[in-house]
Length: 146
Image (tube, rainbow, N blue to C red; front, side, top):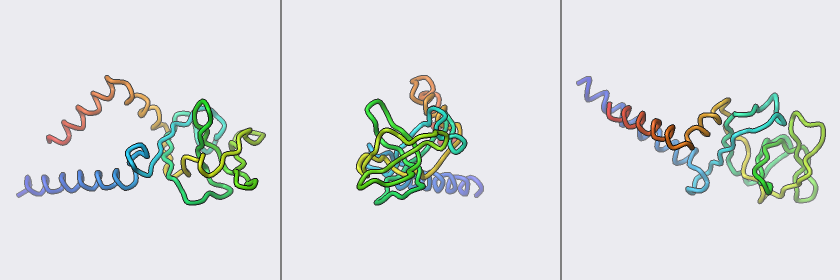
């Protein structure tokens, strides 16, 4: 009886996690709503710190005060919208004295901060290494087999 209940709970947990991933955490390159950004630098302190993981969701519109990420030629920038100039946004880091030189349009914005996980970016970077990815997958398989 206990074993059957435990098995039912395990399957329920797996299904719940799969649904959460599919609807809220699936990356945009897989057709999902989430963009993952690892914070680098000090421009958003004390709100965000280097190594934090930020999950963004695309919005139909953005407003002053929203923390968003946008594309630039050599990567992404995650800053706060401080103004609007026509159809472009004026952004600035919380820890920067001046505004950004780029003024992205809504189409350039990857999304608005949806979830902030302190220090999780370091773990995400490790999972990009084959050894750590293999260890992570082995742990998941072990847990599922239990």
